[in-house]
Image (cartoon, rainbow, N blue to C red):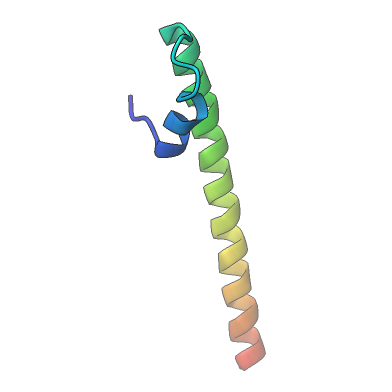
Length: 56
C-alpha cells in the first residue's frame, strides 16, 4: 500500500491507533486527496481554456 504524505500527516499525531484504524484513515484521506487533485486539475484546465479563448 502506498501512503501519501498527506495521509501520513493525517494520523501522525495519533500513534496509538490500531493498525486497521490507521489504514482506514489513510485510505479515506487518499480518496480525499485524489478527489482534491482531480478537482484542482479540472479547475486549472478550465482556467487555461478560458485564458486561451480570451487571447484568441
